[in-house]
Length: 555
Image (cartoon, rainbow, N blue to C red; front, side, top):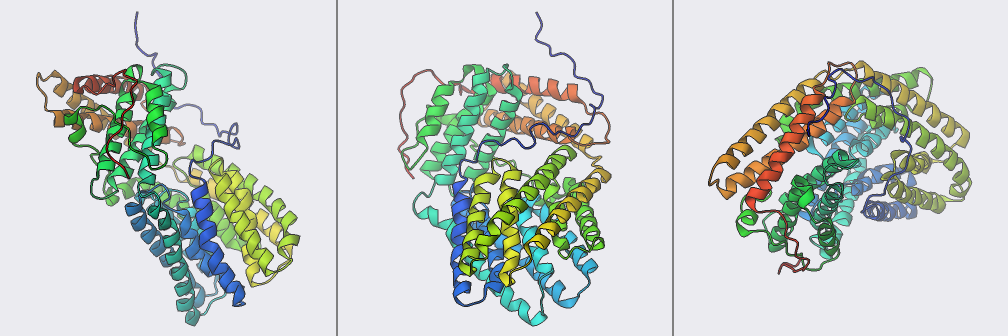
C-alpha cells in the first residue's frame, strides 16, 4: 500500500481561456451591507446640499471623496482610520494631477497618457499595500473622469477642497460603527478563519475539493492575523481572539483531529458583542509569539508587480488612443475599462474582461429603462444615483458583472449632473468604449508576458522546503523551546500558503516555461504532514469535551 501521489506532469498545460462559470453568481460578502450603506450615507448629504445650492455640476467632485467610503470595511478601526486616510490622500493626489493636467492642456492624447500612467500607479500601489476592494478601480474612475472635465487652473483649488471635504465625511461615516461595536472587524475575521478551517476539516484532508478548501482556510487565517495585528496594543479581547485563530491554524494542520462542529460554534458565538469563547489552549503556546507578522516591506512587494504595471500603463493608453481614433467623446471610459481588467494572471484577466463587457452592456439597457425616471427632475436624478450606488455594492461581491449592471447606469447618470444629454448617444459611446477597452486591454495583457512567474514559484518552493526542514529539526530535538516550535509552525504555514498562491497565479500565465507542478504537490504534502506533527508536539490538538466556556474578555 502506498500513499504516494501520482506524478504531476511538469510540461505546461494547454492554455485555454475559461468561459464556464465566469458569469456564475457566488455567495455575497458577509458584510455587503456595510459598504452599500456607507457609500449612500457618504454621497447623499453632499449631493443634496449641492442640489439645494443649485450646483449639481459639482457633484462629480463631491463624489470623488464620498466614494472613499467603499474602502477598508474589513479592517479593525485603528487600521481603518489609517487606511482610509491614505485612500483619501491618494484620491486627492490623483484628482489633483488630473485637474491640473486638464487645465494646462487640451490635447486628448496627452490627457489619455496621463490617465494611463495614473491608472498603472494606482493599480500597483493598491496591490502592494493590500488596500483591498474596490482596489484601484474607483480611484482610476475618479481621476480619469476628472481629466476630461472642463477646467481652469483657478478652479482647481475649489474643486479639490470639495473633494477633500467629502473625503473627510466619508472617513467619519466609515469610523462611526466603532462607537457601537469596537471589535467587530477582528471578530468577523476570526469567525471567517474558524468557518474556513471547519470546511477543510469536513473534507478530512482527502475528500474532493480538499486542496481548494485548505487554500481558502489558510487565506482566511492569514487575513485574521493581519486583522488582529493591526489593532494596536494587545487587549484581553485580542488575546482571546488570537487563541481562536491558533485553533483554526491547528485544524488546518490536522483536519482529521479537528472538531468542525466546535469550530463553527466558536465562529457563531463571535457575532454581536458577547464574550469570546474559551479554547482550552495551553498557556505556553497561547502566550508565545502569537501573530508573528510575516508581511514583507512595501519595497519588496513592488518588484514582482512590474509586469502588472507595464500591462496597465500600456493597455490603458492604447485603449484611450483607440477610443480617440474612433471619435468617441469620452476616451476615459475605455481607459477605465482597461484598468479594471488586470488581475494576477492572464486567465483571471480574461474572466474579468468577459464580466466587464457583459455587465456594461446589460447596464446600458438598465440605463435606457430608468432614464425617463431620472429626467423627471434633479431630485430624481440624485435618488437614482444613490439607488445604483447601493445596488452595485449589494451585487458586486456575488460576481463582478452583476455589480457592473448597476455601476454602468450610475456612471452614465453622473455625466448628466452638468445637464441632460441624448441617451442614445451616451449608450452607444459607452458600449463602444467598453468593447474597445476590453479588447485592447486584454491584448496588451497577453503581449506583456510575466516571465518571472516561474522564478517566483522556485523561490516559494525553496522557502517552503527550508521552513519544513527547520520544523523537522526542532521536532527531532528532545526538548525544543515552545517559542521556537510556535515560530516554526507559523513560519511553515505561511510558507505553504505563499507557495499555493504563487503556484496558482503562475498557472494562469501564458508563454512561460514549464512549472514544477510535481515538486509543488510533494512540497505541500510533506509540509502539511510536518505541520500536523508540530501541532501534536505542541499539544495544540483540540480536546473532545463538548463543554463551551468563555473567556473573561468582552469588547
